[in-house]
Amino acid sequence: MRKFLLSFILAFSSTLCVAQYYGFKIGSDRNKVVIPVEILNNMVVVPVVLNNQIPLKFILDTGVRTTVLTQKTYSDILGLDYSKEIVVSGPGNEKLVHAFVTDNVTFDLPGVHGKGHSMLVLEKDYLELRNYLGAEVHGILGYELFSRFIVQMDYERKRIILYLPERFRKKRRYQTLPISVEDTKPFVKVTTRMNAETSLNAKLLMDTGASHGLILDPESEKRISVPEKNLNSIIGRGLGGEITGKIGRIDALEMGKYKIEDIIANFPDPNSYMDTLLTKSNIYRNGAIGGEILSRFSVIFNFPKEEVYLKKNSSYRKHFNYDMSGITVKAIGARLRTYEITNLRDDSPADLAGLLEGDQIIAINGSMVFNMDLNHVNGFFNSKEGKRVSVEVEREGKRMKFEFRLVNQI
Image 1 (cartoon, rainbow, N blue to C red):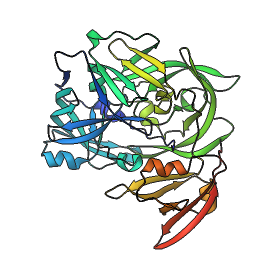
Image 2 (image 1 turned 90 degrees about the horizontal axis):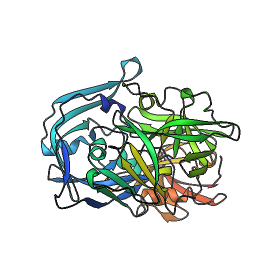
Image 3 (image 1 turned 180 degrees about the vertical axis):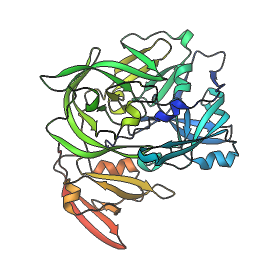
Image 4 (image 1 turned 90 degrees about the vertical axis):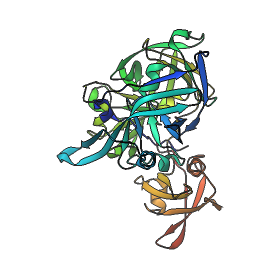
């Protein structure tokens, strides 16, 4: 699977100042509810029914306070009223994001009812979740759920379990780590071993809404340095657009008794990721732990007690690989079955072979792609180092064919 960071931390949503009278509840005769989920690029996607009418799918994200609807079409269909407009500007007062606030919204998950919520509605689909995940995903659900329940994210069995805090009992065999919930977000301090000589106790956001394994900010701590062997790359997408940085490996991350070795880490360029590393409330951190690491565990978030519980699963020792082709693909069209190359990493195998941004992929290794999902397409580009890949594309009305071998560059 392509390890492309999709960071959906909406720092500006923490500044939303509206009265929020909301609440989630499960049946009075139940202590917990089990909800089947999808796992898309290391992120948990839950089914949600909006205002008892429209079934949608939302990413479950510890990095956001207010629920976000990324496609305004659905709130317009429901005729929702907007109580407030929000404009977020970047350098030079350039408008980055225009959004609306709607109140008294109802959310239903299987076995869970929530009413009286506020929701942020993006004017445009700035994040393009459905395109970069290759599946219908319509929004982001965060703190409202974690503040009400103890939330277990079971990546291996593709389910979440919501427990009533007063009835929850910690399970045996789980490692307990203290967290601090600051501005609605969970932070953990763990030992980060950059190399044989350098380590630090880093403060990291536990970010279920990002697909990467680890992001470390060199600006936050002088001991965080980019490894000598690295790649320049687009490491993700945020509300302001692409996030650039470098990719390299560090020796290990130690989380209690668990030591995860030879990790690929993302190092954002200065100011590229600033809106998510230092929020308006001045919460300082060194980076974030994302889904590529979290998905190797069953993770239980206990926000009320400020604890997290971990138990490794069968993916725990899986090797960390990074894109071996240099291609970033997004799915477009009504069926999300047309695949366009949106970025090529400089001097990568695909770049050197002659592929270009804007090429539409027609076939890979002789197989037509119109019936493949995005995960299947990306799988061809990350299967095995040294494997030869042939790609047929359409460019300006012409069909062209290219070949290259997959190379692990870090």
